[in-house]
Length: 572
Image (cartoon, rainbow, N blue to C red; front, side, top):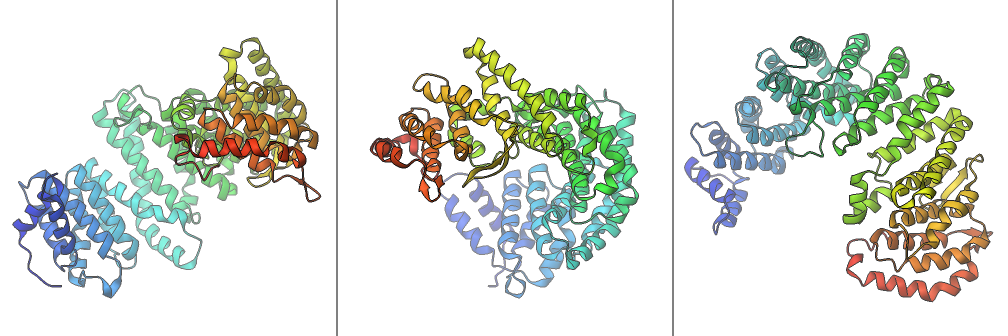
């Protein structure tokens, strides 16, 4: 398709496509057709470079530029974008992005990423030199734009296999990028030291934005294999990481996210990104990381003590706990070979991060589908509670008897607190269900429940004394604890003797009628799972199922036909 494009006409259509009105759809459709015109990207680039253009038109041009690249760039000879245009785009796109306003930059950065997916590094060898050259500009706005672009491009190596072609690509990248990255990181850390924690946002915010991008790049470049340069300079990298982990400030611009109070600010993002790097090195390069493991364990532990339990620090907490967990499972596990250390970890890390958060409770009440996905379907790998759960299992690998005894004392104490004041201490009992599960389960699967268990944990005693009363409390009682009891039953269904099944099925059938979304869903799941338990091919529920089948079916049909069932039928 060939045609000459009128710059003003395209600009007019872009404006119409971006502003709600009767001509919006027609303009959008016309612009969509232009994606097959060979010089369309060139015309959009002219609009983006032009001075005095309405910002709405430039934003629309950036969006259409990105979308055209996404739809038409790949495909080789079948692509409608001719070779000269492709070459021109790659030669000028970085400068075009860096000279644009922030909203346009985001769109063009994504366009660079899309082009790089098919062309970099083989057919776009000049990209890295262009980025590195601008590191010396002294303009933090330009430098940050380049770092964000490099981070977006290199992120794909986090998911690549260690293959010859990938290693050759990384070799090409590292030869150009490893020294400038270390030099720039060192320079920025030095500037942060010199500025001090009392410097203003205009100084510190650009520095910490740069540090975040560079730590992400560091992670990406280490993901496939440990680069020799990073290994040789690991003391420099790790010493700067240690300094940054201890950096403190009261500057709200670093601590808070201006767009969302539940999202982390730049400093918490940096802590999180560095924790990811520690986890990677400890898991994949433990021999090279050995000299630093103990010091970082102390640093990360101390960090967990300081950050509180706000939602904005949730991601940081999960990655920090994950590092302590990775230590417990690695060759460095002897760092925990001390009774006092184990007690402190349980008291200061495990138990506090098992506590139901306000966000969890909000989901339970207002977004039950999300709560169920996280709690039952295992999608809560990025939550404090799941991380603390993993830490208990990690500690059990080498210190099962000690950890079981320590946490058992906490369970007993929290149960006593709950019995003394159930209405105010119900969260303590909620923690108990998760702690006992973390202590008891050795091997488990969604289809079978717990296969093997820790023989030091009296599962049936806990079931009789703590779980069964919550099942029996329905329709009164605390819905969260009833959901916990159902989940515990689901997990340990194979450990429950046959004589428990008849009264259990009666209780769960009644709970299908709960008005609480999570409770009636868990009840349905519990019935499904109990009906998978067999002894020598014979259903353990047996006659009890026949007895309550009619009531179960009525309750299940009632759930399906209510508005509550919308969007969750698959879970039932």
